[in-house]
Image 1: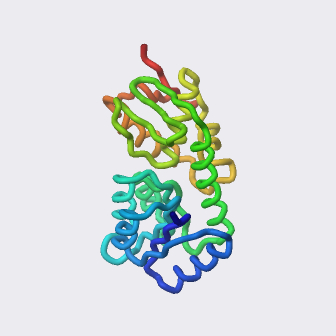
Image 2 (image 1 turned 180 degrees about the vertical axis):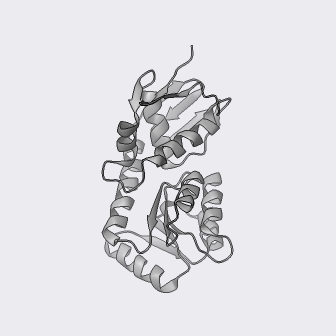
Length: 227
């Protein structure tokens, strides 16, 4: 297993990035195309993916979607595309974070460390939570809906876990955002809405009329447990 899979077609930038991360103690593999990165994942295990968007052949959005269909690995998108639409597209496809190029290496390291810590902390717990046909195995970092595994991003997992653990309670948007992304996160608060909608698509019978993750207008969200 390596710590990081870097998918970056710019050889010079990728080499500099890999050298910096290796000096910080991470083991990694550098793929120069989306296809190479996906192929590497078919026979190797990684803890986190750093993904460029503008790749030859399959672009980063396609790679992100493909990875998320198969595995629940934290993904950070690195891109010179700063348009809000691109950021939201990446998050909707399953990325856990989005950092704009050129980026500060210390900020990238902070994002990587935060994602890895959260993933490890959840694995360290040994507890199962059940509600509304949802089973959350905190030890295995897996969530099942009607006995079928849900494919979730790390942030979706965190968010659903917190909602279910606090079932029946109205949770303020600001509190939820800080719990999942952290007070020092560079993500936008609108990211929370995107992730709530993605969860509803996966666990609601009618996502447009949610009965589990309910909006409390002007305040936040509440997870309702049905009898």
